[in-house]
Image (tube, rainbow over all chains, first blue to last red; front, side, top):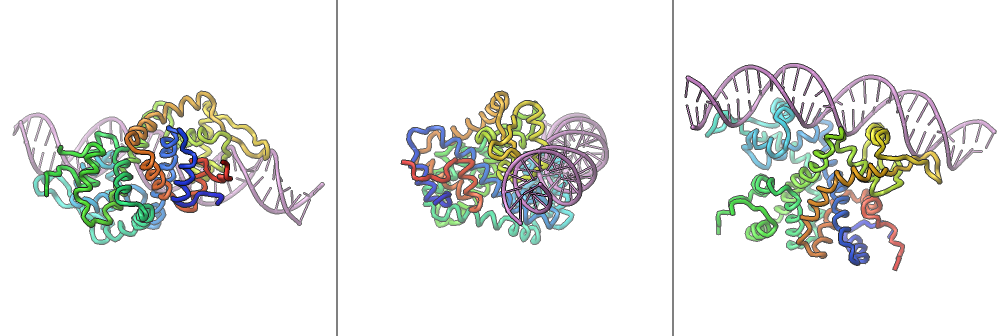
Length: 179
Length: 179
DNA sequence: TTAATAATGTCAGCCATATTGACGTATTTG
DNA sequence: CAAATACGTCAATATGGCTGACATTATTAA
């Protein structure tokens, strides 16, 4: 038992030393967030490489897949990059047939973004390891504890960005009392 | 109540629609992790800019601060980059007096890394917003729920990287039955 | 003791992704 | 019609990754 390798040992090892060490949780989150995210993004990075794509391409595929009909402006807001940066990867994805642009119905200046079938296939391929990773990390977690985790992640977001995150990621703004 | 802006509303809004939607948690983690991390790293990025430093410099400062006497090889393993990439930013930090190198005692080929006082000051400045962010996100979370969150983050790490994470980040390998 | 290996540094070049600033075009809106 | 908006694009620049090659010093094995 030289190293901690699972959640149970992890929890035991921590509770053993939980005598008034208040800021400890804070530094632990700091550290673990780095390692978690590093490994989390390494999955699609490796798979993208043969396609000549990078992390930026995956991010675009992901958000367009999750929000079909997204506008370019929405995507800029989500990714927090400049239109020049986005423009390059978007152009590549469109040229190679992974993303399709349709003029907006209400406003024809807009280019609504959709994944083509091959775009959807590529996206699934890219993020299946990420979903597997998350499923594994959640598999023994109760629904209540899952809510704790989600709520923590949500609260790590800038408060002014939470409405966008809720809308784009959770699709839960305007609950409008349905039911 | 048009948008969800705090943990309570978040939890309520979710539990209202928790009717057999199993994979929902998984996609929510996927989305929230992106937004959380995006905002999390934006803090030091802004503060670093005036110094001419980037995210890479901060990462080095952070891990050296947290593990004084770290070797270059350790740092390469943690950051998962090549020595050439690390070399550049490390050289800048050493040249500008933020990091000090001392030959290893056991093995004098090693250059043990330490923060100078100004390195410590800069690091504190860079990551105080991150600590504030984490503290805010944890403030109303019970110790048990904090353990749930930490254990989730830990399990998101590649299993082969968990020993390193535990050692470097949590300093909890080899519990060697103390107590 | 010599030879192999290890820890680190460095040079040179390449690539992906980001930036700012300026300008162009189509479309909507006041 | 004029102004603002949504989007695209050209150009220049910076950061931070990468590969490959080679050098230095110190340790370890033959």
